Length: 454
Image (cartoon, rainbow, N blue to C red; front, side, top):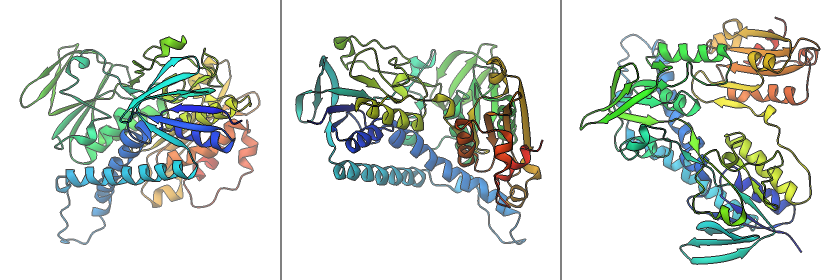
């Protein structure tokens, strides 16, 4: 008799888990309280990239302007963009992908129940939704409920008046000015978009620099590029207070500086919210970081697994997908483990950032003697020809045996190119192995080849 598995959440952790379980012969039910695809599809990765694509097109036009004939009369400016059309395009993208996902569930014979799931005891769950209350039993359950935007003080007192990565897509008007709270990936991507569409943009970050945990060479390159385009950074600054008036929203920093903008976007991370899911009834503890799970996605309760943002291991959609597959395989008798060391970390602004494994400081902290090698795009033919000279490729080697420990790419299609380096880190390839590859010319990938000879 096939195992009965309930998957709570249809986001990038839940739906790959359900698909893999079906492949392995399980009977699968997905419970979704909101929209198919979870935060990633509806309020995160996909809609934000639709916005960024619009911004990038506006940015690219500025580069094209210098190639136009004199007196051509083309007078494009960001002010000509239509906010309603920008939002409409985002909605079309989301609707199309959500429909494809629903059809996939149907094709794979995965039962979908709309409603809020709550554990009612060991091996039992209650679903409350439009159809009333449904009680079900299961052999195993996968918790893939995701997270919500975090509002640290003093911003949490003004939740309704401010916006975040969930609600920004529905702003009635494009603001003339915006303050982004948080210099991480979410904050920088939206700062990049708003700046590109003509919004006066500032970024407030509590830490001394943006992109915490990334290599200083990376953060310096990204920050410099943003500043050249007019984004203002307020780094190492704690917020002392927030004021809301009819015309402006004000952030007061601890040094007394007051920053005014029409809108404040809070992008200070995400937090788990598992209230009402009955975790206490099965003895499963959680906090704002989520539910603790091991590398096999097992929680402290036998038969209950936690994947994606809700376990706090790696708050990335692609990490969630792999974790979902691992949980599914382990439920069906395998013994798989998630390797956080090979997860690509991406920033989809421009310049793009892709990194994997250890940077220099992390490797040295881990006890390695390190050699780094770097090649700048200024010396790469494809980069110069494409006017993509911002950026570089950086490789981090173990000096003892020249094994690749990590890599960072900035500029060009960095989020695409990082995967070959992620594979190299996973396979523990050495400098000599990477030199034996043939890199097509002219390509942005040649920066890797150039770095190998530094």
